[in-house]
Length: 461
Image (cartoon, rainbow, N blue to C red; front, top):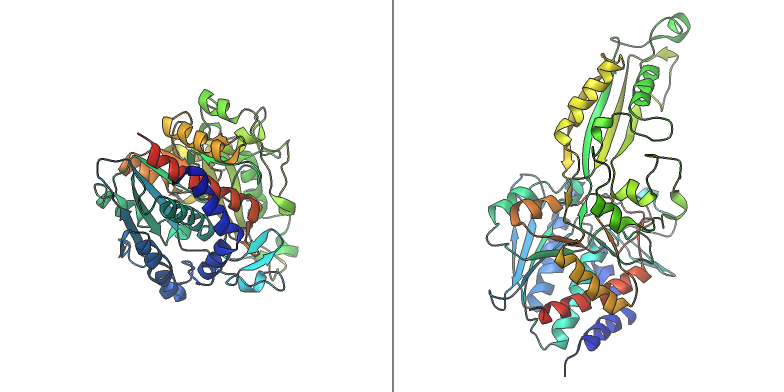
């Protein structure tokens, strides 16, 4: 007789006998970076050769579609419909990665070869996102085997290949196929847990808003000996501009950028006692940085942050004895759904003018990825917590939104589904940089948790 425990055991056996590790190695070996047009064929091959045959073996009907935005990667859809009257679950992943950055990886590592060192599996896409959607599909396979080829519900999948380029085209694609993609809930995986050892459910993501601060003072540089101390230095002035936006301890001074009613009560409630960390040696939590009076969890999951991503004046790689003609900083706001990004640029303009920085321009301002959030107390969220805690025998931490960006808004706006993101990675995985890796412990818990979820969906009435 098929049982839940046996389904979870199947998934864990596949993991423990290195079946999953070997599957991930084959996926990592496909150089599906969307950030280099020279790898466009590899991006398509990931869908057509690695994913499509696997899904078809599991009984899915699969199609690969061109991206509605020219020059961006294809989108795979798949569905497995047992009865239209049954619950329908939508899941999501992305098969594209950032650039390999081959010359920056530690000696002995290659981004396109899975390398196992202790509990770490190194390889580009291992954590973001090949390992995560492969965990979920491998767990689904185990449940199908245990149940003799039936699930007791319907499942649909979207696997895009332009997430690392801002999910360009996905919104238009989903909007045009909203009827075909209709579902009751989205359950998918991306991003990090709050801590490596703490199973996590995120019900949304912070959005990203970018802009440039630009100061042009003259047509060209002027001699630093003749003019230094006489003529305005744009780098210095731009530094003071940034200083009026955020103080030396990270408190945002443009207060119109922030949630006007503070952290919502529902958000504060689920974040009570929430741990934050696991970034490894490359990152620290500085308790006196950021908004005073907030916990670390509230700062990153319930508040907005301002970051200077890049800043230039003159030629840092080849400086000359000249006062530079201009300075530029590329900035980002990570924001929650409790603020309206439409007012970010106008609010900044008002603030800079009031502070006397009228000659600093704001350019290229706009949302790169919108924020999204499902109520952390939503019934589907509570159901997923119950399922995971039954499987893992430990507390599951709910957070109102992941700290990173995901296209959750697409599914909320056009499919009106609640969001249940269940990450399998951690903050120290080095995604987007050299030495990206998947951590064995969270991955093993992830395949067990999803085997339980896929099983329990068949029991849900």
